[in-house]
Image 1 (cartoon, one colour):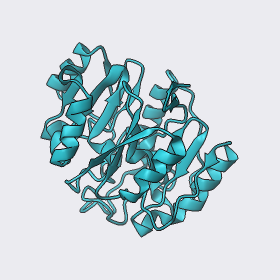
Image 2 (tube, rainbow, N blue to C red; image 1 turned 60 degrees about the vertical axis):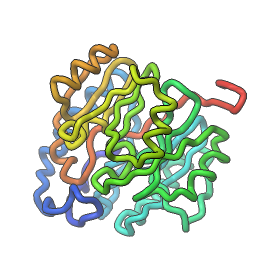
Image 3 (cartoon, one colour; image 1 turned 90 degrees about the vertical axis):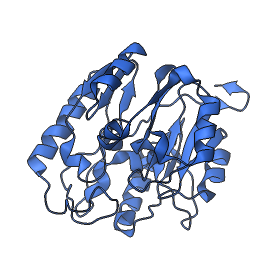
Image 4 (cartoon, rainbow, N blue to C red; image 1 turned 45 degrees about the vertical axis):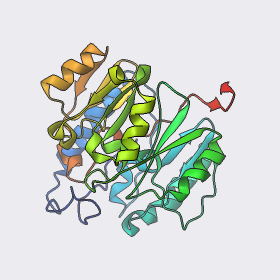
Length: 272
C-alpha cells in the first residue's frame, strides 16, 4: 500500500474523474485509506511504498505492477500523466528483491489492475482494451510461465479488469458481464462453473463492488447491495464494507489501493 499523501484529482484519465477535479477531501481520503489499512492488517502483513510529490495516483498500488512468485512486471502506463511513476515503481520492485521483466516500453501494461490470478485454476486472467495492450499478454505468459487467459473490456467506465472482475477464494468469481465482449464472456463461462459465478448488476458494479480485496473468507469492498451480500454469504464469505468515496472520484476503490505480493506459483506441470 502507499499512503495518499499527495493524492489529488486534478486531471481526467478515466470517466469517473470527469467532473470531480478539485473536489477531493484529502483528510477524508486519509481516514478511508487508514480504515482499509487497519482492516487488512488484521489478516495480512502490509508493507508500504513511499509516496512521491506530484504523483497523485501512486496511492493505487494495484497499478504498480504484477507479482508472481519472486518475479514482477512493472507497469508502463497508457496515460502519460502516470508515466513519471514508472522509475519509482521499478526501483521499489528491485529493492524488494523481485526479478523484474524488462518489458518493451512500446507496450502498454497496467499491472494487477489488468492481471489477476484465478483462485481455482492455474491461469492469469489478463485484460486488454483500454490500458493494457494485447501484445503484453505473450510477454506475461513467457516470463511467468503460466497460462494467460485474455479477456477484452468494452466499457470505458471499467478500464481495468479489477474494476469489474474479482476472482475469489475457492474458485468463485464476482464480475459484471456487460463490461466484457462476447468471446471473453464465453471464456469466463467455460472456465468458471455457473454456481461459482457471482454476477453483479449495474448498481453494484457502479459502486465498485468488484474492486474488492479478498483474504481467505473475508471480502473488503466499498459497498454492496443486500442481494450481493446475501450471495457472498451463501458462498461462505464475510463482507466488510469500508467507505471509499474519495477514491471513487478517481475511479478506484479497495482493490486499487493494494498490490498482493505473495501468490501461489503454478508451473505448466502443476503447483510449485
